[in-house]
Image 1 (tube, rainbow, N blue to C red):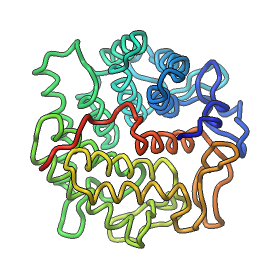
Image 2 (cartoon, rainbow, N blue to C red):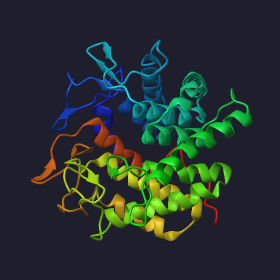
Image 3 (tube, rainbow, N blue to C red):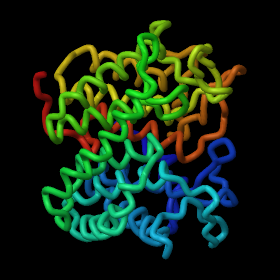
Length: 341
């Protein structure tokens, strides 16, 4: 079962704090939209005990909505700062709200649906690959009673076509990817196209999702265990895969992509890769060290050359908890069933 000890320790009446010093919450680090969106998805998957937490994180997302028509990504000492706003953070919040829109808790579902109604108008202008991918997953999995079926379908088509165009512009016999480099949270790109296929049966989405996930997996699992693209320069086309620093959020991205692929196709190869990626947290990685801290219930911030980064911030523990919940079958955003292809 997931261990919520550190998650609860990092959370107060405002939301979940961004960073910790070792396992001690850093009160001066502030709160981010990214983390509170992920925290909402955790709370929605916790059953009845998650309800008061879901209220906290839903209210955080509501308060973060700005008059300029977007979410603010940083709250520090009671002041909102927009210099960290991005389509990526917007997309994570959109995905979280889409999950919340399906909640059996009426207050949560209503509040998340109202936020989606405001946010959805911005989607056609998105050009960040990951921002598009997060929103596409949200569109394919949430409830949108304020949209006509035709407009909803058109939005899914528009965003998936935008990702497909990124892929076709970069793809070559030795590079089946959406950009000229692999950076962070790479798994969300094929995951979103698997979700689009599950939504509308677009075979081009399925083909590209399978090709790109195979390309990603061939690189990340080349040594028989997961090696995430390190953030020391990223993996640039024609270069070498950097091994450090490896971040927990990227492991979760691979796990979610493989899970989505398995749910859509029923192919066991994806299930095996998902479990192999999950074991990264438990020590099956390049350093042979677990990222999960049994005592605190937290997750170390990453693998570094010297071992592990001993801090245990929100992003790390939320990535672990979402992965725990997904593999345990409790994740609120699960697809209902696999279908053969």
